[in-house]
Every structure is written in C-alpha cells, then in structure tokens.
Length: 207
Image 1 (cartoon, rainbow, N blue to C red):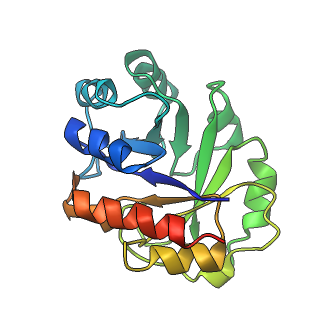
Image 2 (cartoon, rainbow, N blue to C red):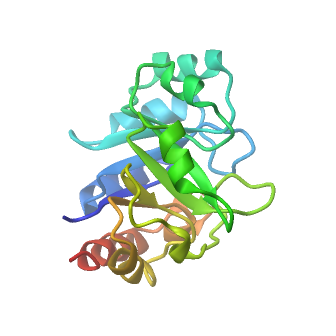
C-alpha cells in the first residue's frame, strides 16, 4: 500500500494548494506560538479555503489548553488533531475528533507502551528527540528503534527529505510520512520542486 503523505507547516495558501496539486494527502497547520511556522486563525482559514476536496487538514498543537483547541475547531475546518507535547490520552480524546499522538523517539522510549496508552489514536507519529524542541527540527532518528509489531498506524517523521524518503519508506514501511523543513526554501515557505520530489520518492519507496 502506498504511504500517505502529509506536508506540514503550511503558512501560505499557495503552498497548501500546490502540495495538494502535487498529490499530498494532507496538509498540516501549526498552532504553536513558539514555532516559526505558527499560523493565525485567519491564515488557517485562508489556507483551507484554497484546498481542493479530499485533502485532510491536520491541526498541530503543543501542550495547548482546551479552550484554545476549541477556538481553533470553531474557527477552521479541521479533520485531524495532532498533539506534539505531553498531552494525556484523556485530553487528546476529549474533543471527539480523530487524533494523532507524536512521540519523540530515542533509546528507552517504548512505542508499544505509547500505543497502549493512546490506543484510540489514528496513529503514532514518530519524530526525532531533540532537547527542548517539539518537531520541525530536521533531525533524523534511528529507525531501528521502531517496533515491527506496533498495533497503531505509524506516521514517520523527523528529518525526512526528498533525498532519504524513498529509503525510509522501503525500510520502515510506514502508513504515512510527514515532512516540514525537508521541503522548504525557508522556514514556513515551501519549495514546489522539493515537495514534488518528496511525494514521488515516498510513493516509489513502497513495495
């Protein structure tokens, strides 16, 4: 099965529309003030308006309060929530929306324990552990740390680029891949040629 592709950190409507035109299955909007890819509610609405049908909109949060998540949901059509902080399973499922839980992978992190705790998540997003950061770092982690028998869908992230995504998909066989900095010409500004190469590489890496 071909892996799904998510282009995260979209900040401009033209980048979201181009990602969709190139074949991305989902785009990610970052609602985290400390991120250089943070978007306002008005930016998010404008980006979503430019998307064609059947492209999923993922809203990314890092340790948000409940009121903020609900404000985003009220203001912008969102299909999936993505939690990148230390959110509890109870918090993640309290919005009655499909959600993904990000896990920063390093030796000693047991993804099977995470999968059991967040058993109703649509998937676990495996990202690189970088001290003090919650994604978007461009760092790659050791893919051999990923268990072969993970009971949830695996979304592979962390330092993926057009140059390594084909190898990553071939080796890990994830349900989906997620990229942000690897397809940019500047923080939050996507590069169409890189997005095209990334999507092509992801699809050719599957077996």
